Image (cartoon, rainbow, N blue to C red; front, top):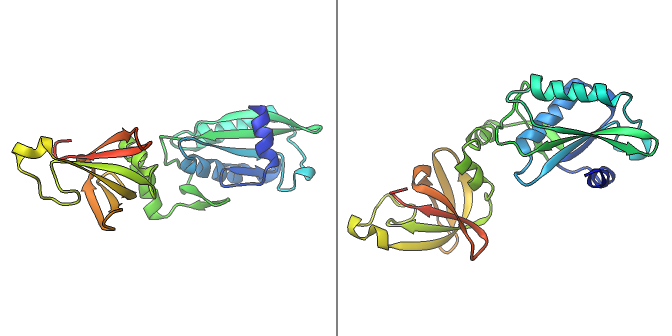
Length: 230
């Protein structure tokens, strides 16, 4: 793990890697940690390196790693709601010690410590009302899985109904009529899924209550099964 962290330390900052000097202060640390917890993807981690600035060669390290870890614990567990999961590792760099605070994906987001922050590029910004609602909706596991595929192509299998249409097929034939579509996921919340049918270019939506999450093994992608009987 230390080797991976050292490599991230030496790389340029990105959306989920940030460096701050020890003197940045509690408020600055809090803002970054909350934005990481609200933004890091399911298969990723975010890292805040403390004791180093943008110019790594001018890093000053941290004076007391144990005390700083207690401060980070206080921020994540007491100042934030819900509490933020984290790990701390002391990273030796040249003749100094740096502290790496590792933030994994959080299924409990959004997290708050005042305003809800998210990552926008390499900055921590206040979440807009729309993004805030998406964070709330992502607490539903089904929504969270579908949102991970937003902007990507998924397989959609319609059972006994016309996709995007409230018209259902006669009950006697519902079980035997299945039609597959390729769709781009546009939006998903606790109420509906909005998609674009690739073949027709039409945008359509389905109530989330009609949608079951599955996986298309053949195409190695998400499958949404749409049925009035879900």
